[in-house]
Image (cartoon, rainbow, N blue to C red; front, top):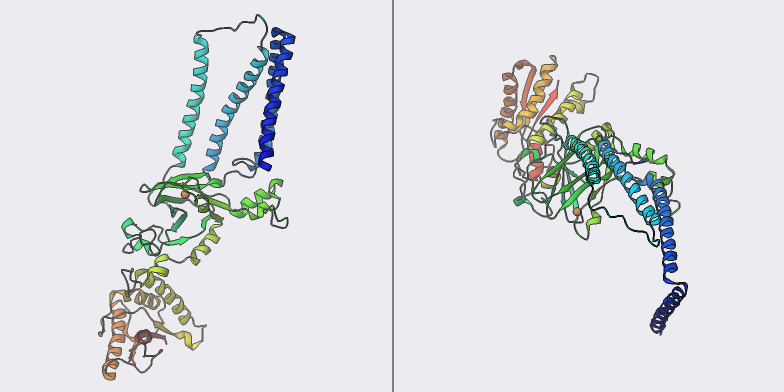
Length: 499
Ligand SMILES: [Cu+2]
């Protein structure tokens, strides 16, 4: 029924329109052709003129109304060191094009009005004019040259890569449908190598080669955290289709191409908090961030920098948004200490780990640092806590069943050696312990020999023998149960005691 009424209404509307057109035609015939043409030319050209005025009024209003929402204006000034030159390029281009835009439109509408139809008025026909040709080719060419030269200078400046040895934060952004993987280089400052053949969904999304030591400290982060005032180099790559690494507030935008790594170097100049304070000054950003909830925090407070994929890479494209947080260098250092290497947390000692069951340089180094701290505490004469005076050197390794020190032990031994060299009054007791596997008498002998090995290492590095006592306790002083492999491993140990 409803659709029948709609159909009838549409038919009726057509009939009415046809009738109106007929009435108009008859009225025009009565007026005479000439007068009617003059009349319609007058009203049309006046209409165009009014349209022109309204058009420019809307244009100016739009510019003013949206100024504080546009990148580069109001509070949205660039938050990176190079961003200013992109903004000034944009403004320069806008300056020239707006001049042409305004002149062209005023001329277009004014000509339509000025030269509207009049009986006997003839069109002026100019077949060729060298001067005109020269003007309208020469001026745009000149302006183009200015824009291109200025643009090239800015481009070369912005795209300058970091020099080798230059300090920069190295990050890799890998895009796929529909996510980003953000990999930081870790303490060594270098990203480890990858091979697409090593990609293993779920455990090795990037195809990192664990045999490359630079990979071992790399870590991943959901959020892009950057320090203010430090150079950041992002290498950008995609795994499937074209994506685009876009940080609008930093004027960073670069395609992520499968198979061809691209990069961008930039320096953030405003922390997230500083940018929020900038926004706070503008009334546009004082309204609730959630329009449906008047009690939600204002827009400036809810603001975050963001990373977007600026390539229409598929239907889940919008979900590639990531938050970006710029903090002070101190806060960044603090954040770094909370980040865990992907290898150490997810790969270490699994079947994918080429170093499974073997001690690792990075681990030994960090253990040695811990030992250095606790040894300092043990040596401190003000510290009278007896428990602090005995240290378990859990990074001393011997060849199985023998007293020969293996190379990995050097990290821990070096710490002991340093302490003895720095504190000439320091005397130590080195004691060996074993688990309960095997014959007690030979275990006792082994523990004594192992303690002696440590002493001889220290002596061979210039430490007087009288400063080090050694003893072996065999299996008599376990610190854990001997029923599990883990417990037995803990019981096989070397201890030092500050005397
Ligand atoms: Cu994408």
